[in-house]
Length: 363
Image (cartoon, rainbow, N blue to C red; front, side):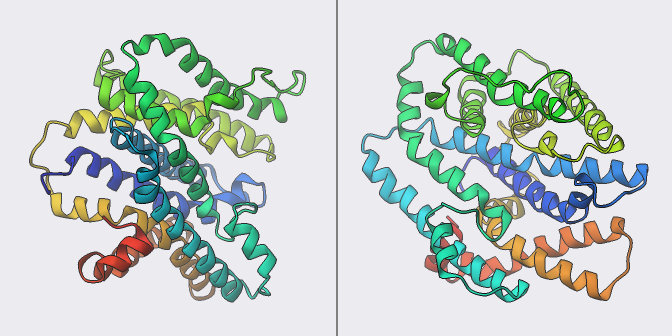
């Protein structure tokens, strides 16, 4: 890997994009189950639940990586950061919102609606392809990054933020997780609605970013042994899966939020995984398959952008030309969409570098 890069963050970023592609490959089959539109056997449910949960780790890893990379930096000129980092990301996002809408109209045989396209490009309506929800999230985070960085780096004692951090975890993760059950399963108790004004605190996404910074820069989780973190991951997965199966088996289909990033178990699994990867690779100068890992890492944004349209086309082909069982189709979707994405991005990384930077944020 090149000397200017941090190899362990390349590992994290590569793992993150693999998880995201896995998540969307499984979601094509698992979402009807979550919504009560399809019943599956207990063994198949366990497989889909496991793979989908692993897939959900991707976004927490990406956000934590953003914190580890961006928050330790100095930002003497915020406008320069906006011009160098925020504006290119915004332009890339706008290009792909437009392209995705055209793709959506062609593939789904929808009438082109200029008003809808404008609303999508202004971030006033959800994008036609669901994976693009992440782009306005990360753009919003980028707007605030220089100021959060200054606040954290100017603090000589980060312990003074302990109360704010703990309350944030309670409000942004623990209460939303409890509310999943209060919505249908435990109706004797109303949903919890915190009356604190948390507008200045950010959101669950900012907590992933800040936690990534605290882990990378200040070794937030160093007091815990790796075995304890691994046990925490397993316990969080088992408890979350038990809760999800309880909802599924009792036909409570109104919420799928136990898999969203506000879920406390997803938060713990993602953050603990980030820390374990840091410990495993932080001090390593030589990593197996380093060129492959770096390539996937550099192309991770591009893979995120194009893998979903590829998945849509593949799934339509699968529906028409195969009756293979789901356990075969899921890995087929995953590997095919991943490899096709990486192959398509190769010329943009090696030859058409300016186009690669503009269209796919390849650095």
